[in-house]
Image 1 (cartoon, rainbow, N blue to C red):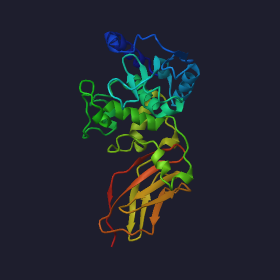
Image 2 (image 1 turned 180 degrees about the horizontal axis):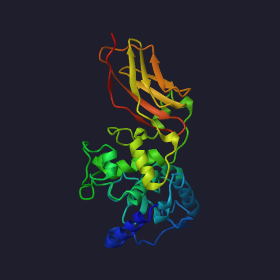
Image 3 (image 1 turned 90 degrees about the vertical axis):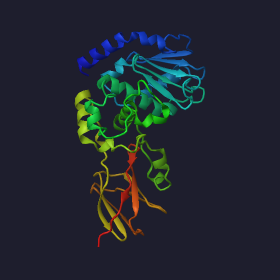
Image 4 (image 1 turned 120 degrees about the vertical axis):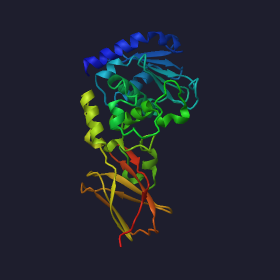
Length: 319
């Protein structure tokens, strides 16, 4: 990590230290259990359903997310017993001024694995503020490379935050980008593709109206250069391009990877293909395509259970 980035954050945190008194959990020492990670992060339980061993498991889930020196700046991870006081639907929140993650509903979720997705997303906020502190501004380089110029992004989230607009806040977009590029991942069984379980359980970006970050090479290169943390090759997955339309088949140019599942969504049914080689071509055959049909694809890398949904594609048959 660049020293200038750390220095910037230290100054920011100190200058805004008055805000610490506004956080309802900052100075609460009535925890049930505590675990301190090797990096010095405190894992605190405010639920009698969570003990020290479970907090250590939570730390083990956290470090499955790819990280660098920014991990040393994370101060605390807290497990609260009930729902968020601001919104019962919220499972976690990141406090940027004190580098702290709060996880809610500890009375319902008692296994660290149940917090994996939430923990990855909230750590994505920590990652973003550690390396890209201006990402929530429209003039940031990240925003430009992410293609947000002409999108209805809510840049005023610090002053006008609403859960109903969650997917359009830049902070939330970046956090989900982190989940897809660096977050903890598991393999999906090939057999679960045809029952749709793999797609249902897979990890996608909350905002499917945005361009696919897994295929944005320029943005990925920028993030790697700024952080020094490489994005694993098996995370990269370009958006399929329709290359051939016939009466009974559709052919797409896709990522040259094995074990990627593609679900073709038609009006009345779905078809599935799993890549067996690295040809970069997927063809769906024996189709009954109506005039001006509209299709879309769900894409899922079975090695990581990470994927995305494409925009609708209107077909034009060749004569």
